[in-house]
Length: 300
Image (cartoon, rainbow, N blue to C red; front, side):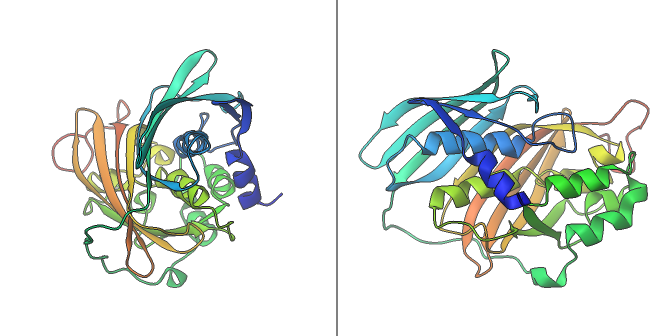
């Protein structure tokens, strides 16, 4: 089974009751469930209880506990409201008898209305940028454990993700503007199912959003050993139709870091310049003891 097929199988939850679903996990580069996976699975669970003519337009989620990749995750859907235009669902993900994740999602029937959007920022063509398989091995010496390169390549094989500028791990120790851009698409074609494309974008959205926080302080990230971090909460708004198997530009910035937390915000554009998604995430960003405040201004 190739990587994309394996990911799609991961998102195809088992329905064990009318509003209860069960999902498995896949190995990751860290000993916990990848946050984008549990968010995408929870959205799948919510979407399967919603009429087919209603598309996801927003989600708001909290990561409560680290997930155990060796145990199934049970998703319970609460049908909060079914209105004439909007449907609201709440999903709780449970492992070992404890909630690990909470999601609220809203779905809407299509409507015509006012139209405007922020302009797409400039970016080079994705084909001109190195693939992960070309980029990561160049920086093996930047990681505390060099074997993390192979693990990262394996866990991200279902997605073609390309950095516009050097990623944080490549320039650790150098303070940069808190902005990062990546192009991404799935590594193969997807079915014409709008919910599937939204769930795949949700899956990818957790991979790089806090990079901009790292750049502002010259940090390389968890694999470089200079930051201990985890996602805390995550919100997405789906503005316009898009396909996750076609190139999407993920333009990410960080307006603030304080109190051991960092905030990332982003816009995702289609290659044609349509603003498809807005994203905001806050995460724990702690400097390991003995690493000091680093090169950035103030303390991390």
